[in-house]
Length: 287
Image 1 (cartoon, rainbow, N blue to C red):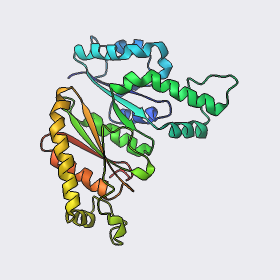
Image 2 (cartoon, helix red, strand yellow; image 1 turned 90 degrees about the vertical axis):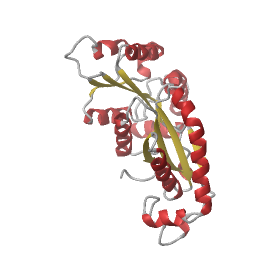
Image 3 (cartoon, rainbow, N blue to C red; image 1 turned 120 degrees about the vertical axis):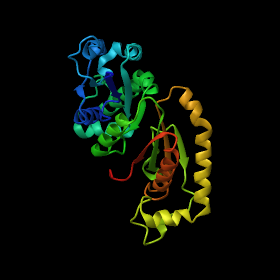
């Protein structure tokens, strides 16, 4: 069996420990805060006693070794290891709040004359710069609005997807809670008729029969679906040829409950005939 490696990187406070626990639950041998220099010995390509499925978390504490990680991972790929990279991100405001609530010290925080808030803000900015290359090479998950259970569910669904083909991730979200930071493409559907204003539909979601029937009757919804689908069909072959593993398509409405959820479900069903698809609903609890 091919050796499998999942590398979790990301911003401090973004949920790497939670993601690693999800992988441990899925049967991976997990190591937190692994120095990059120990990556190849951990995988042990020439040692049959080493675990076949390994997950590691790396962060900015690795310091000077971080720029070498992409080359190390490519070397492992060239030697037959199936490597997946996941980067966890969150908005600056979310990270500031999490560090304030937990009273943890950011690994890049410096002591001096600046206030604690200013030191933390500067540390987050510096960390973004240091991790920019790893973020660019990874599948990004925005954890700003996610519960721990949602993040664990997302990670498990990602690693279950086949690595040999492009995976489409369709994600619904609410603009009122902030735009999805992990999206490759964002479509705004707030101009479509809103089931929220129908009392009998207000408590339902875009996965429920009443909302589905309501939106199917609206010609603007069908037009939006067709235009998004046509755009994606025109560009997905190019993205696949560019060696992309994942493409995240985010659909946003006001509350992230009706229109965006409906379109995510419909698009995922339509594209599943030709591509591997996953769905996420940021504002809904895990199904």
